[in-house]
Length: 124
Image (cartoon, rainbow, N blue to C red):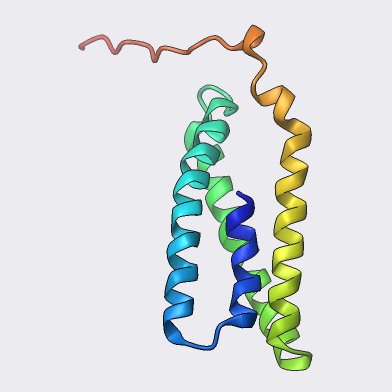
C-alpha cells in the first residue's frame, strides 16, 4: 500500500524511459496486492440485496474522483510544477493509507465475522 504511494516521488528523479518502466512495474505489483484486498473488504461490508447499487456507487465515485484529481493535478502542474504534483500525490496517498490503519480493528474483528452463503435458487 505504501509502495504504490511512493512511486510518484520516483518520477522526480527519473532521467531515462526505463526508470519509468521500472517504477510502473513496482507500482503494478503493489496495486496487484491492494485492489483485490480493497474489493474483498468492500464486498464484505455491502448491504445484502444492494450489491449492484453499492458497486455502481463505488465505481462511479472512483471515476469522478479520478477525473477531478486529474483536472486539478493538470491545473496545478501548469501553474506551478510537475514536481510539486508528484510530491503532493505521494503525501496525500500516504495520508490516506495511514488513515486506513484507524479502521483496521473494525475490519478484522473475528468475533463478528459470519460467512454468508448465497441463497440457493429454486427451479421454477
